[in-house]
Amino acid sequence: MKLKTIILIVLLLLSCSDNNNTPPDDQPYRGLIPAAIGNYWIYADSTWINQNLSEVKLDTVEIVDIIMRDSITWWQLSGWELPYLRREFAVINDSVYSWQIFFSQSFKSLVYIPPPDTMTVYESTISGDNLIYRTAELWNEPIEIGLGTFEGCGRYIVGEEEDERIEEFIAPGVGIIFVEWVHDSTWSWPYDYHMKMVLVDYDVSNGD
Image 1 (cartoon, rainbow, N blue to C red):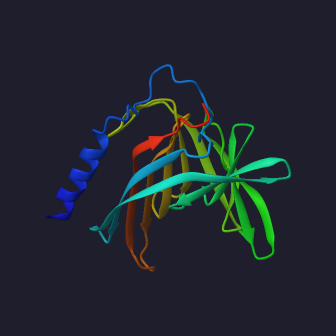
Image 2: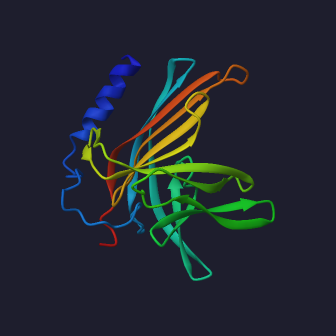
């Protein structure tokens, strides 16, 4: 069976499952990423290298435990490490932070802010010592994926359009619904790398 056929079957089965995951219009705001033990998200990940589809897989990200640091609750994830969320995250004043470890130092780093009406640039840290600039904005267009249509999403970008860019969409009260990672280089392999993560199933009902 061809790889493309397998992809279509997997996405069709997951999008047609009777989980009633399409967000209702009156869903209350519960933060960018609903944090509670047992909440999970399943993504269909597709990777292209030099314009050839090389891998398709399903990844499950689940909140499995908590740890307290300085009276702050850090939620621990199992499964795939999303590009910037990492293994532990905290929700502070509606913003999301990741726990960074660099040699003997550890600290929190701002990852996502509530989507602002106008494009906003802010600082973040990745891998403990790399300062990056993130762009956030409220995306006024609906985002359509197999699970349904999501509105009022936040759009987050790191990198340049022409070189390397990671673009993420977050539906408040649901979590990360779509990630696209593009790497286009003339000197480092893979010269052309393209990855997409699409949310195909989730359960964020715990803690309601």
